[in-house]
Image (cartoon, rainbow, N blue to C red; front, side, top):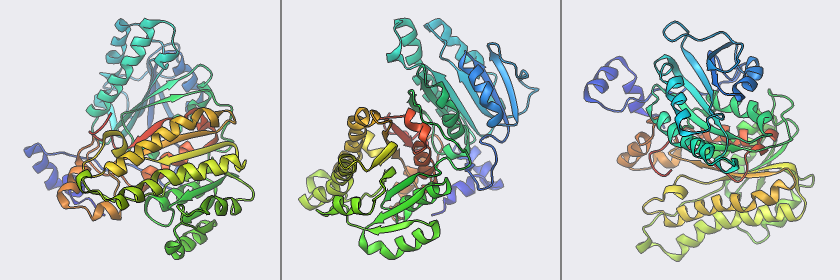
Length: 450
């Protein structure tokens, strides 16, 4: 569904009226388009500590225009405030900040840059996970980066985003994959997020087809977000098996034909669902996306047992049973990647959605509980938590709730199914085993939850 306010706010008349009344002024977001050659089309500036030098080494694969600013030992030309070009991407390595006094380097680096950011710029701050540091002063300084990065993300304008990546010793080799995602339009609707990159031996061999040779299963794939996930995984080279309820078989078959994949009509809550799924995967599976989900909204005082049980069965129990069946049967390939579709409701709660929020919070717990077990085989499991995404379900919402959902984020608009799909495609890459047992919110930095 089109966002009429977004279009109006960016028209000539709309801009004047929105500015005069102090109304939200969301910017159209730049998203990945077929045929794009570089993650960053524009100037990238680097600064900060030793990780910036490692980023400088891979930067020519990210952009054609590279600058340094307040960096240690960088070889790239210096960017000069007021004279240099507008910046499309910024990477600052804060991993060397070891006490509270050194945090002033954040202000000294970012303040001169902020008025020179191009539309839909992407900012990434690098640090070291506080819990991995022995020095209490350094741990405190690194923890402070979370508050800074989230506040910076809320101050950015014109569609810009900011993220914080904690990088473990030994995880430096996975920086390229993370930066290819977070500095590009693939992360257009992600902002204010904090992720922890750990050591991972798997690598992407071909960045034009990062999922080449991988087999992927997507549940709830017939339409909406599920269909977008399937299309994006296929775009990146995966062979896709699309699963949905038998009633959606016609749509499922049509999508599978377009993507060169296979379709499986299956009720994931059926008692024989695990066995039938294993039969459909004689060669095993490398990527599993548990996207299927339902809502049955009522306040708790009016919640029927049928509403509660249905949501729990589809959203929470089925992913656990199917994953366990795949794991126990040895059907998960080495370096398998599992993604669970959670929700910001599972983080912040939502009135009238006690069953739904509980099921989605449970999926986050599922990712955390299984992370160590899967890591033994180089595999990983994570949750993606969408916020307000423009789908046929949100189009049916009352207009007041729909507008509130769109505007109550730092980016001031709803996301698209493609935004969720891009995040899952990145987490499905071999090198993204560096992220495990974590939650990535695709919500435009929604103003609900953490």
